[in-house]
Length: 294
Image (cartoon, rainbow, N blue to C red):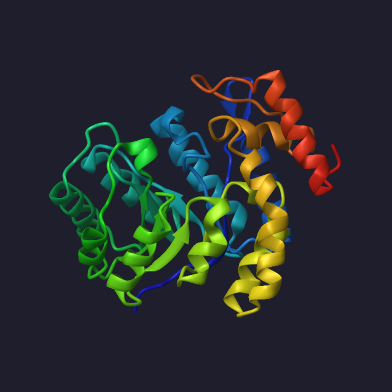
């Protein structure tokens, strides 16, 4: 039977200090999320600046996160690549490290056809026996996984879900209708979590949960329990803060917000650069309006 994931799953930032991965801060972040009820943790995703992690750093971040959670919450390791062979290698490592699942983004830059996407994900799912969540984000990869492709891949026993970041609720609804309960659908955009859950989604892989984890948990759990009035209230309160996380390219705003909240030092890796002053002021305003102590 497939293992599905649901609720508030944080796309955890990768903390750096003086250019190196800060392993102690990873452990601290994990404790923060366990304390606030986060349902699962994703290291080495887009928010974790995976494109600029070395292969060794990638392995270390996954291993450190798995050790720090100590089985208290699931770890879904980002293991995507535009090389199928590299994605298989990263996925094998995640399984060996003890991850509970993996998140695999569509191959970026090389823009495969739908047949290429089918072959890519099937090759990984055939090679490694671990729950796989696909990640459809055309804005970053240049390719959109169509509903018919999603439905074909849903038949594979190791493919359990998809993180949808197309921004197209019609496409997401089409996906859900075609898959008939064979995948869990997770929002890849905090502003669309509730709309997706309203048509059958299971939760979110969240950026904003890095700073307000308990609130994202409350919103997703309200929706999962059928308390749509409460879920709507929480969604509308979160909405401006979610928008603020994209004043500049993710993860620049969320790392800046974490620095303002003293949850991190805000250090980024090139080509990510510090947030512009005008946007910092806008971010501070949004955080203050939400009631955060900045």
